[in-house]
Length: 409
Image 1 (cartoon, rainbow, N blue to C red):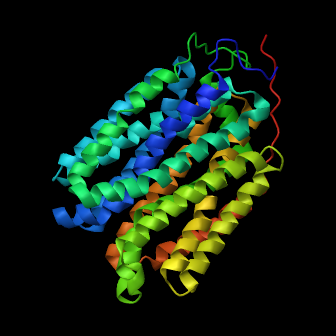
Image 2: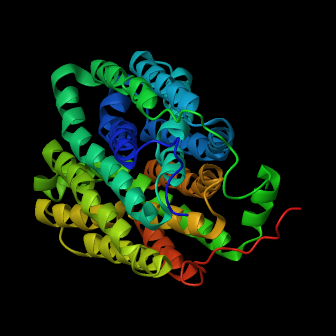
Image 3: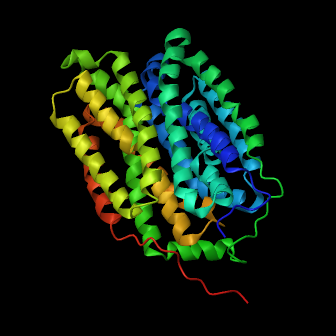
């Protein structure tokens, strides 16, 4: 049957409040790149320090996402999301008051990384999978991803405004207050009478993990998702300083408004991209859409590097990348649900996402590390192009069909 369980949340409720959760969580983190230069300059740190904190945040997020996902699948997402909202607020407050590198990294890396495991797509998609009919699932995932994209579009100018008006420390404290709104949002997503037993019999977590790891398509998706993380986090964290560095040669791109506008455009066009991915993923092979997205990113990055740099070329690049930014999310998670079902969707999505966050770690850290060593971001841009071509190829052989399981006695 395609209908949701009688005790489930309504689809409208899941979309509204799930969308609000990812709007806050993804929106706040999307603006961290704006804090790069203000924080490192104020504390006398190298860019590698800030980059390492964001890289660690992404690594923690990815490493613990399968664990958080397994807990949410077993016990329900409500308590997980409440804890995540609290950790997110504490982490932002800790970043604000820290002048010591270790404390800053603990707050911005560990606490916010853990918070994101409980407040972003994997947990919300688990709720969607349990409460939305199968024929509307990828569409609903696209809606939720679009909500996160709207948060990115909304929060970039908001965070730049906070930075300009209050400075980095107070801006982070205000964001901490905003993050605390995730806690009441979690109450609106509480699944009453949540039960772990549905649709997949008595398959255990261990059996589900073995089944996924042995599946070639799952491995292909995992490899492709590494590339997604590398590209988007490198750009999110390092685009603003990249433009600032080139302002001596291209003065027009050095103004803060250019980087702010570019990051906002990524969020704006991401709305259309993720929604379109949700719609197209219901009608076309999702593996081909994924391959096209990764190839399109490589072409966009190459064009950005080869064309003369200006505000216009920067905005065009941001718009194209924005359309391709998170459109991988509903497609990748849709394939996972299509192959394995929804009983362990949060955990399996988290496992794929761990690869994404390994890529995010590499993109964030290598950007800062190689810049400090070479004085240029060029090598990392070239790596991003090559990885996009690799992801284009690796997604082509994915098989989008449900696996056949032996029936338990």
